[in-house]
Each structure stands twice: as structure tokens, then as C-alpha cells.
Length: 242
Ligand code: 4NP
Image 1: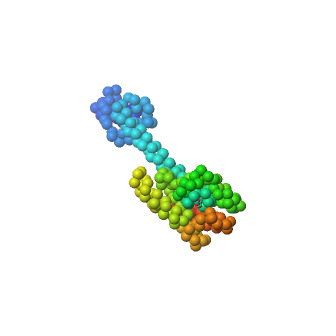
Image 2: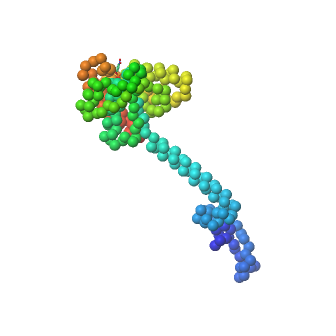
Image 3: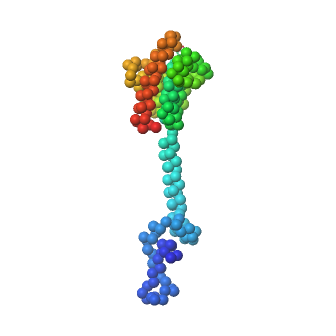
């Protein structure tokens, strides 16, 4: 039995039969497939098995590493950044509407959601009280604090959604400047899209700036954002991005 486990089988030659006390060893290569981990006694006693053990250990470590990589790919949240001019009206509302939708579907852990402005004028400020009040009437909380868009956003987010054409041009303009001084993903420009490109129930191509207008403007912003966010989530799910 011990000989078998060494992948070497002792077969008594006819000349020695029936006396088997002085066996001759014959190597049977097929027995090399025996998994040495099943025979711990052998692992420390035979150099061939030792090297086999090293190979298996390396292989299983590599397999564990690739599993970890696959898992982290699977668990990495899909990230969306909403952008407007001041980051106090439209993009904070978009962030609030999309966050609310994702939470209602129980998908919170699968998303990273944020918002930013193309200017830093309101940096550190809460969202406009008119926008927060309009959203609250629809049961949506807006909690963001204004911040300007930054170069790392092009690395940290999968999708950057501009509220209007000017915002989109400003985001791409900033990218043009930043790309010369730091390494940013090659697909960064394709990450930038118009929010209304997701609208299904509305024909508008932009989310209009409500800042200088009346209460109606804030309601219109929310109507458009609810429509766009619904389809946005649908498309992310359909494209199996989460
Ligand atoms: P937002 O609205 O871009 O939707 O946040 C605006 C906020 C502030 C100004 C303009 C628009 N502003 O001129 O200060």
C-alpha cells in the first residue's frame, strides 16, 4: 500500500514468486495522478511529491486570486454622477430622485450615486430650499452638499449625466484641459451623456434651469427627472451593469 502511494508499485517478478520479501520496483506512471494532499504522510518524504505539492499550492493560490478579482468585479457598484451648473437645484434633485428609486427597488448596495456642478460658486452649500421643498412634497429627500466636478470623477464614475447642453459642453471642456495634466480613462468622453436622453414620457432634450424662475420650474425639473431616472435604472438593469 505504501508503495502504491509513492506512485510506484511493487510487482513481484515471477522469479521471486511466491517469495515476495525482496521485491523489485516498477514505476507505473498513471499513479502519478494520485492527489498527494490525500496522503499527507507522503508529502514530506518524497521530493517528487513535494514539488507536486508546490505546483498544486501555486495553482490553488492563483485560482483564489482570480476568484477574488471576479468577486470584486461583481460587487463593484455601478456609479452615476449627475451634473448641472451650480449643483444646488437640478443635479441634487436628480441624485435624490435616483437614490429614492434605487432604494425602493432594494438596489442601494449596487450603486454609487453623487452630484456635482460645473462651477464652484455654491461649494459647501445645501441644495436650494425651493428644490428641496418641491422634492419633499413628492417624498424625496435631497441631502447633497454642492461641490464642483473634479478630474477624479472621470475615473470614479461609470456615467456622468449633464442636465443641459451647456453643462455637457462644460464637462467635456474641463476634461479636455485635465486630460493633458493627468491620466484619465480613454473612454471618459463617452461617459458624459444628457439626462434627457433617457426620458421616455417627455420630449424635452434638456432639464431647464429653474433657478431664476417660479415654483412651476421646480415641478417641471422633477417631472423630467422622474421620467429620466426610471428609464436610466431600467437601462442599467437591462444592460446587466449591476
Ligand atoms: P443648478 O441651478 O445648475 O440646477 O444648480 C443654478 C444654481 C445657481 C445658479 C444658476 C443655476 N447661479 O447662477 O448661481
